[in-house]
Length: 390
Image 1 (tube, rainbow, N blue to C red):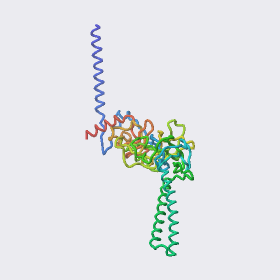
Image 2 (tube, rainbow, N blue to C red):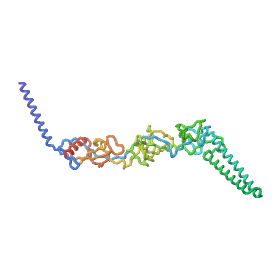
Image 3 (spheres, one colour):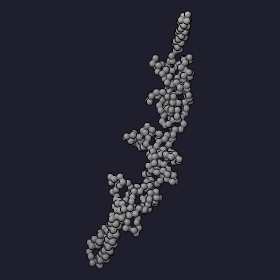
Image 4 (cartoon, helix red, strand yellow):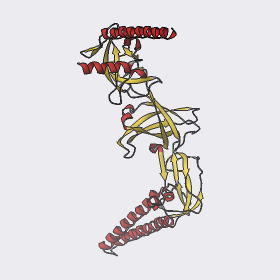
């Protein structure tokens, strides 16, 4: 009895299941697939997949700001590197790092045989010229009374001209050293060629110096003895990837921030190098940054630079990242053009950053249009099936 009842129950359940499956298959068979007409994918109104699609409005893109890290350098347009023009030994260093100097101030004194010889040459040339002028005057007087021939006067005149030329040469040699030592000719003074701050000093008392140090192969010797710069202006070098260089326009205002982030400084882009680094493929973007009165910024510091990208370079719109379908170089989105109608639009990434959850794109898409977000992958599969069925 029990066995017959169980068999009857199982048969009834099976019959109901088969009946339900048959109705479900019949329902699916009655739903027509979406069709693709002139790029527009059209779904039937009763297609259950339509409930899987969520949409959002395309947003206009606000002003875009980009950020790069770079290293500060002293501005070469306001920096002088000082070497010794004579060979000799350092007697005294008269300044220290961070000292403010004026043009012509003595930085160090050098005991130099070369300089002593130059001073001696001037003294000798002055004495020779004085003697030559006396001889010329004597020859002129003797010629008047017929005591000498005209050729003797001409020889005295030639000698006087030679002595004048020799004195000019000797004085020029001293002037080219720009010593301006006054009455003290025992030592040569290295002087500041411009006003500014001593930002680097590589010199000690007793050190030997020479003009050819700059041509030496030793890194310490190739360093200038003094570096004088305007600490209120520094140069910032940014290493920017090639594809981002169009964002960097000369004249763009830049906000610079140190790693501590407690203060910002103003600057501007002054140039973009035309060549790229062979190893990294990056280009150098040059900026001028205004320092504070305390000279907080110094050469060698790594800072962050932030600036706005121009309207043309920041073109495009913002869409939810879920809406963008496809791999790099083949990205697209789907515009909603009424209930059940969707159009595929090819897009490309736009320059600059975007807020979290959003992607900046360019293409034939405008702010205010409706775009598919959730379900975009399902819609993309339906589009491909419809395109294959054509």
